[in-house]
Image 1 (cartoon, helix red, strand yellow):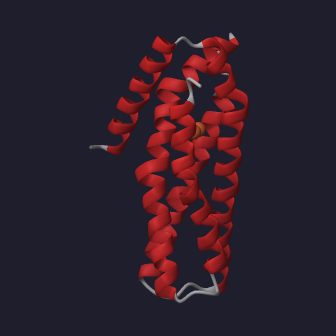
Image 2 (image 1 turned 60 degrees about the vertical axis):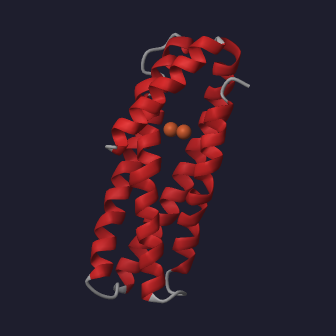
Length: 164
Ligand SMILES: [Fe+2]
Ligand SMILES: [Fe+2]
């Protein structure tokens, strides 16, 4: 399948998405230190891996889907999912800072739980939509050359987004 590299990338990211749910489960169960470590790892994954992946899709994948569908703006709803992931990740960063300066209050714990479960559901569903609705279209319509160029452009965009 032409899109196998993208499916593989999702498969590599998915355990870290699952870890968001595990971190939410740990609230009120694990020690403050353990929970803080989980939140820190979650934020590092989101900012260091997931958001660059989303940026690469916005730059180099979704424009191709728009063209194949013959509908400019068709992927806008999916880009808005990426924007929401960014917003929730910033909230998580703020909560991480609060955790560093003391124990969370009960309302803060509830807010953290909501952000982590929310991100988990949002990202799982988003991956599912890409794999079910977009990747089959690419597999049917792209040539090997198109796919190679697309993956090179995605990699360049992700590297740029990671700032390395
Ligand atoms: Fe995406
Ligand atoms: Fe994706």
